[in-house]
Length: 382
Image (cartoon, rainbow, N blue to C red; front, side, top):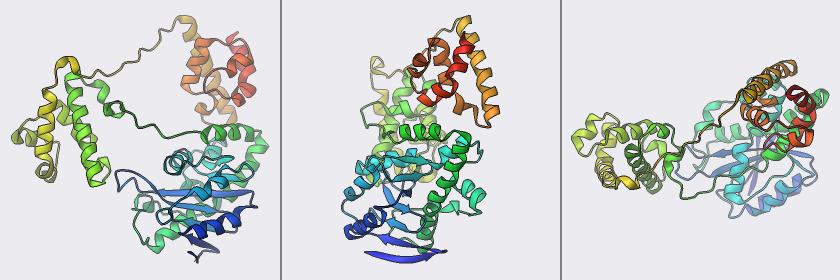
C-alpha cells in the first residue's frame, strides 16, 4: 500500500508492502543521491529493531514500514548500488542496524555529520545543522517516542518525513564547500570506512566488561555484579523491556558492593524503589546468595591493559606531535582529533615512521592523512 500525504511543499508516500517497495525502487533507480534516516525502538524494547526507514530525494519522500513488510531484501541492491549516493547523518548507528536487522550493506555513503565536522562546525546534531543551514526546526521530543507502535500518530510520521527530506540538499551544500577547501576526498575516505562498521558479535564474554565502573571492583564484588547483570538481562528479555527500565546501573553497582542477602538488607541498601523491591526482591536475593557461593578461585578478574612504558625520546615525540597537531587544526579551523587522535599520536611516536608508506601502515591513520600531513610528520620526527 502506498498513500500520499502533504508535508510542507512536499508529499510523502507511506510504504508497507512489497508492491510499495517495488514502486519506491522504480522511483529511485535513476537518482544520483537519496537521503536515508531511521527510527528505532531502543527506549521501549529489549531487542532493538528498525521501525521506520525514511528515504528521500529533493522531489520524493518515502517512509517504509519494515514492521509490516515480510522481507526487506528488495532494498539490498539499492543500498549496494555505487552509482547512487546514500546520504545519512551520524550514520554509524544506522549502518550497524541495517546490517544487524537485514544484512544490508551500504556502498557510496556520505555522512553529513562527518562532513560538517570536517568543515569545522561545532554543533553537528541534525537539528542544529538544519536550523543553521535552512532555518528548519526539528522537534527533538519525537526522538524518544515509541516508534514500534502502530498506527503511528500523524505528527510523528510528519516529523520522520521532515527528518529525511533535507539530507540531499544538505549534502550538496557540504560537498561544494568541502571541494573548495580540498577536503572532499578526506570525507569520502572516512565515509568508505564508516560504511563497513558492523554490530558487535553476541559472544559469551562477561557482561561486566561493558559496564562502567566494573574495573574498580574487586573479584569478590565482580562476581556479584556479573550475576546481577545476567539476572537483569534475563528479566528484561522475558518482559521485552530495555535494561535500564528494569534496574539502573548505579543500583546494580550498589548491590554488588553491599551484597544484601535478606529483605531488610536490601531495603537498607537504598538502591531500589519500593516497587522494584516488591517485584524483584526474591530474585535479587537468590541471585546474590548463589553468587556468594561461587568458590574464590572461580571469581572473575577484570582484565588490565598495562600502558606501554614510554621513554623520554617517545614522550618528546608525543609532545611535539601534539603541538604540531593543535597548530594545524587551528589553521584549518577543525577539531584537533580530526587531524590526529591521541591514539594515532602515540602510535606514530612509538613506531617512528621513516617514510610515507610506513605512515600509511599505521592502523587507523587513513591514506588522506598520510597524503596531507605525512611530509610534515616526517620532518617533525627527524
